[in-house]
Structures are given as C-alpha cells and as structure tokens.
Image (cartoon, rainbow over all chains, first blue to last red):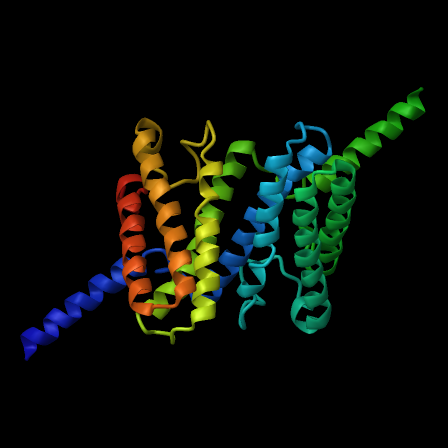
Length: 155
Length: 155
C-alpha cells in the first residue's frame, strides 16, 4: 500500500517536473501576460518585414510578402486569448482601459484582425500599390490601438 | 537651406521615434532572439491547450482542438526565422550545437513542423484515439529537440 503510494508520488513528481518546467515559476496570469506579449512580438516581427518592403528598404517580393502577410493575419488572432481575468496588473504595458472599455478594445482588436486579413487577401493579388494602401490602413489601426490601450514608457 | 535641413532632421527624428519605439534599445540580434523565444512561447501556449485535452484535464472539444492544432502547426514554422547570424550568444537558452550541428537541428525542426502539420490534419478527422497517438509523437519530438538543443537551468 505504502509502496503503491510512493510509486504514485514519484510518478507525479516526475510528471509535474517534466511538463511544468517552463511554467514552474509562473502563475497562470503571468503566463497569460507573457503569452500575449509574445504573440504581439511575433506579429511585430513579420509586420517589420512587410514594413521594410513597403518603404522600399528591401525589394518587394510578392511570394514573401504574401507569406508574411498571412502570418500577420494569423498572429493577429492570438493575443486576445491572453487577456484573461487577473492580468490587469503585472509585467504588462496594458492600460486599465482594456478592462474599463471592453467594447472599444474589442473594436480595435477586431480592426487589427480584419485589416490584417484584408492585407493577406490583397497580397495574393500582387498589386503593390493596392497592397501599400492597405498596409497604410493597417498601420493606422495599430497606432489607434496603441494610443488607446498601450502605456508609453513615461506613463 | 538650413531651414530645409532642420525640417528634414525633425522629420527623421519623428520617423525613427515612431517606428523604432519597440526596438529602440535592441540590436537586430537581440530582437531576433526575442522573436524566436516569443514564437516558442506562443506555440507552447496552444500546445498547452491540446495537452490538457489529451490528458483529460479539460474536456475534448473537436473544434477547439482543431483550431489550436492548426495554430501550433503554423507557429512551428516561425522560430527558425530568428536563428540569424550573431544570435549564438545573448538572452538565449540555445545550445551551441544549433550552430555546430545544423543538419541535426534542421532535422529536429523539420520534425516539429511535420508532426504538427500531421496533428492539425488528423484533428480535422476528430478521431480522438488517433489524435492522442499523434500528440504523443509530437510530444516526443519536442523532447528530443529540447534534449539536443535547449540548455537546462543547471547548464
């Protein structure tokens, strides 16, 4: 009986040890904040590729632009999963308005998803002037949401 | 002439200020490390949802499992973009073997992409026993790559 218990305890320790390594020192809330910041970082990385092509810093490559616009569109759908209860405070630049004005936050977030999806769709067509115009719309969408909901360093 | 120069300088400062906020304090290499770690974090987040369904911690929901398996499959394609030259050192748990054994790293990374894609494909079918078996294969793939290429805390 004791032997059985010890075996179970050992198994449990090993299981927790193995599956919990990454999150061992984090609460669920801290992990959610880390996740949403990570998904914005990944989004920003691919947005940067698009930005450099639009600005002419790197040459326009239709296939690459399309691939990365699709990645931005997919990544745009992720961050909202990280705004779970209890994540208003912590290692975050999120303004309290995210929770006090949820309808406006949803509106800004929906715009991010929709304008990104539209860019990915237009990217397939390959008309760079049309693409640049839509990129500009997306850029404004980012700026609006940052103004509304992301703390600046001085805040 | 001076006036024109000043206007240009002001414009340049504003442009750099606006576009460079996120990366202002980071080198390209630091940003690439941050990006690849972020994409692994986002991958792990959705992997966690799948893991909890497979283990019976949360009930199996075919639509949600499929959606998150697709996200894992897409996210699995991202981290490799962050292993650019000069990122062997810095805020990273990457072992030097990533650069000294590139063929093996590619093999492990390809497996991650392929087994994730296979899981996403099988998730559409909805046969939970088949899905669980493939999840187990993916889990082993993660473990192999971690053993080969990710430093433990004690290292």
